[in-house]
Length: 497
Ligand code: BES
Ligand code: MN
Ligand code: ZN
Image 1 (cartoon, protein in one colour):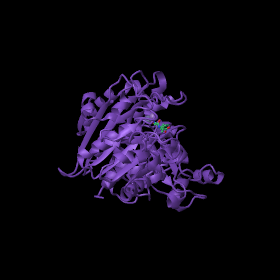
Image 2 (image 1 turned 180 degrees about the horizontal axis):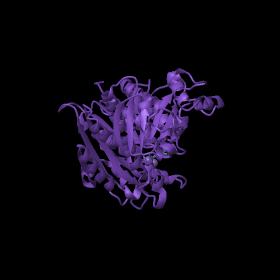
Image 3 (image 1 turned 90 degrees about the horizontal axis):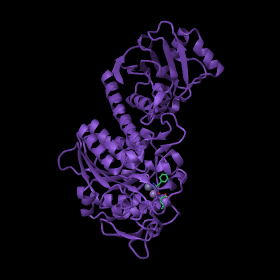
Image 4 (image 1 turned 135 degrees about the horizontal axis):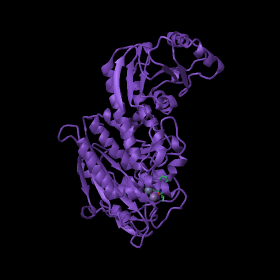
């Protein structure tokens, strides 16, 4: 896709397809809409009168051959009630636009922002376009690719002001954010046989090289030397050996304490000996979505040259049943030395995260954020509408909350109470890995808390937001890439806690 930037009046903007925005309307008012209506001989007023177009978010009025315009086709796109318009309105509206037939069949499009001259709206527009038009076609043969959009160039046109360089900065940021999210989606979509821990580590190394990140990979021997007994107890059931991926973005001054990100990288979760039911087990190829988000965040941080140091830790392995798999009732020793009674081998994510969180101490982090498809119970808390967050530091959680409203990737805080901590104590070892059904999401975090050092920590459980079933405005069905824009947004404004 080729992007260009300009400042011109709507009617003087030349493109195969010209796109501009309006708030909800019940009649044609204001100069912009009146000008458009006149150019199509009252066609817009007729559409409004008939209720065909009311400017609700994502509604599109397709107008042909407006007189006196340099473009043959004009799409007027609704943003919803004018008092509720924010960046998310633009993301959603543009997501719909990205799949409009006239847009997919055009070579070049222009987005004209008119009076909506706000950097966050520019950024959201390119995000909505890239996220909404995404298709995962790697395994399709034949004609599937024919349905792909032919759009090859987008012109972004500043409205009121002629701040073309501000426009360009906002678009470049949005492009990096969205492309990071798309990388996360592609990784999560990849079938487990083609994204084994070893392949995943190679891929991380290649991406790191391309984007100037430092990357180190620990193999099974090195993981043993680190005494990551909890991580290894999950990996041991598979013929595929585990890997531990470490990435560095050194955007801050040397010696500045890093923010550490930890991502759950289970490339397939069968449940192990505590085998999952067959229904929906195929979705467990996505049990590495937390780590894919972390990897994509690192690459986006590098692209945006964020001025801080960030370290990513990704424990990756398969959770498989076999003659060599961990048995329910086994006790394993974590890197930290705490012993864990494995009640349920399907509670494997917390085991691999425990050792990775403990490893984070090496970096004397200023904060640690982990992301994981950790508990199915999230579905009963926020559904697919947002991700629960938990942790030990209100200021850090508040920053995530703030970034959530900016990015539309919503989060909501849950508590960890002593009752939940008690749930994770074992009769024969220090901890159990499963405390039963009550408060599953909180109990998992209460387990992780035992491995947290003396640093602010936030845990994002993305188990019910990493996969979209039906498709929404800018999230086609499939892997969502949730959490990439959320955390990049937070890191972009990072200050010492
Ligand atoms: N990867 C799953 C969680 C999950 C479930 C993610 C459904 C997405 C959709 C995790 O490893 C798991 O199996 N968790 C168990 C824990 C339980 C055994 C304590 C769960 O949530 O049922
Ligand atoms: Mn599991
Ligand atoms: Zn899992």
